[in-house]
Length: 318
Image (cartoon, rainbow, N blue to C red; front, side, top):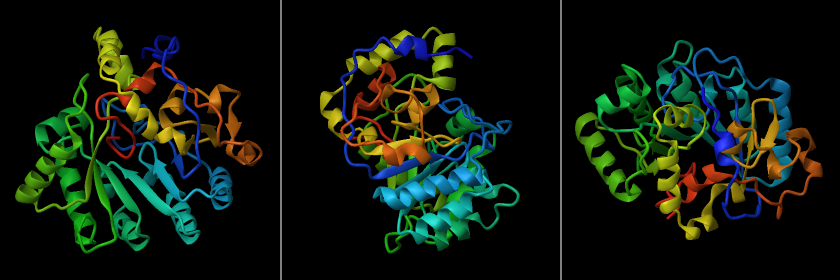
C-alpha cells in the first residue's frame, strides 16, 4: 500500500484553533465484516485491533468529566467489539447522546440478531453507510450482496421506529462518491434517496450525509496507483471554501484510537498525526491537557473537509 502522508505534509492549509469540546469520536477497532474500497481506516475481517475494556473505562471516565455531550462510536464495525454494548449502556446512563456508525450488514451477522433491538432500547442514533441507492453501485464498492443485506437491515431498523417522523430514533444514511470526485449537493441527493428507497423498499430515514473521500489509506493508495492523486488534490484545492473553515468538525471533536490515544480527528488518527501536532497523548492523561484554544494539526488532506459544500462526519457543512 502506498503511504500518502509524505504527499500531504508540505501543506498551505490554514491554521485553525480548537474550540469547546462537544464530541468524543471513539474508534473501537479495525475489525469489520466488510472491506470497502473507499475505507480510510483499512478495516476488514482480518484486522485484530480492538479497544480493550480498561481503555473503554478510561474513555468513559473522561466522557463523564469532560462536559462533552456526544459519544460517536466508529470502527471498523464498532458493534463487533465485544464491549460495544457495555460502552453504549454506560454512556447512555451518563446522559450522553450515542451515535453508532453502522455499516448495516453487521445487523445480519451471526450473534447480532438482537442488535437492532438493543440500539432501539437505548435510542442510539444510527448513522449508516449506504453509498448509493442502486444495487450495482453499492455492490461494486462494498462487495456482492451488500446492498440486499443493507436493505434488510434498514427495514429491520424501520420496524423498530427508526427513521419515522413520530419517533425519537434517528436514522441517518451516508453517501460516499464512487471515485475521485466531489459529492453532489446533499439536499437534492437526499430527496432522490428518500423517493427511491420509499418507492422500491418502503424505507424511511431522517437525513442523508454526503462525505468527501479522503486521499489517505486505502482510497489514497488507490489514487496513487492509478496516477490520480495529484489531480484529486488539485480538485479539492480548487473547490475549497474558507467559509467552511468555520464549521469543520475538528474544532469541537477529539478522536480516540483503539489504544486510547487522542487525535484532532479520525483522519489524523489514520495518518498518525498526534493531537495538536505534538507527542501523542493518551486519554487517561488528557485531563491534564488544556484542549480549548490549541492548534489543530493540519495537512493537505484537510482540503477534503472544506472542498465544495464541505464535509464532516455530519455531512455537508453548508
